[in-house]
Length: 364
Ligand code: IPM
Ligand code: MG
Image 1 (tube, rainbow, N blue to C red):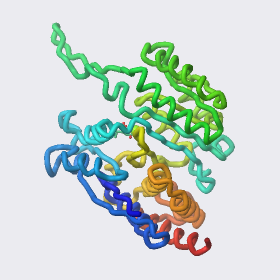
Image 2: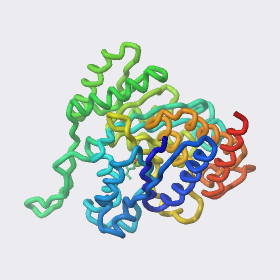
Image 3: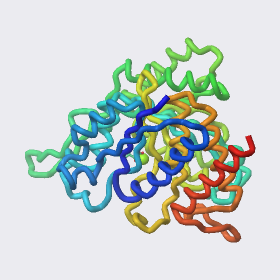
Image 4: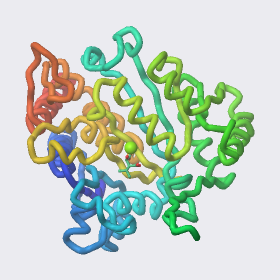
């Protein structure tokens, strides 16, 4: 069995972290015989620079023709003055929307070795394991009308639209409940139903769906409170389900509980299990090319790819265990470094994971 993977390194640190994820896939091929056929494509600012479009038709076709997609990161100051329609981010958003990757899973798991890297006290984050289920193809990110208009008095006015159809809410709700069944059977739906009608509808639909999952406990929380609770008592959460923009914000917040945003992978799935996998962090232009980026979020995205798109749990477990072993050995990129541990570069961390994969596989 050979899996065809579209690889989009993107911008900033994207190419560096992707190189390490590719090392890990190569190692899986040699250790477990998992067959990958990788084809690299252009997306984001890199694509704009070469062909004037952040998502060239060829890249979209490659993504469609592949069994799964692995993406690095997009964006950077170089492209910030461009029109929105050709910004690097638009390439990523179109990829998500055109492939209907509506269900974005962002696990926030504290690796015990990193307990001191968290900005919170150890007892607050110890054992943390949250799954944020973010709606990814709707809401204010995509709602129309949108833009900046000039009013009669000459002043400019910016506007965006928060919009959700019942069916969009229902399908992300089902994703969340189905994931919760396999976990601690708690779903917390995050909204702003006290102010926004659209999220009042969100709350209604979540209540409706919950009757189909009697074994799962549903609660509701306003987003401002959820942000506070995430840093006050994060272990109260099992699965959080929320809108596109709230999920964007809360997942960055949750990432710091785990020590670094450089640790969090994600899966973006359509209704049939096809998925795109990417670290939740951005392109970090300030450290691009310096070998300081943490490749673990991308490497852990490979593990999610194996698990969610291909049900290759042995291969996924091997990657996850190797990450633990690499951390155990003391290897730390600068974002998770602390005194007494060994600071390694981006490629040094990739090498540590690959060495650990051999070690773990030999011990099997
Ligand atoms: C993320 C990122 C993206 C988003 C950007 C790069 C468009 O922040 O994946 O969380 O806002 O969704
Ligand atoms: Mg984000």
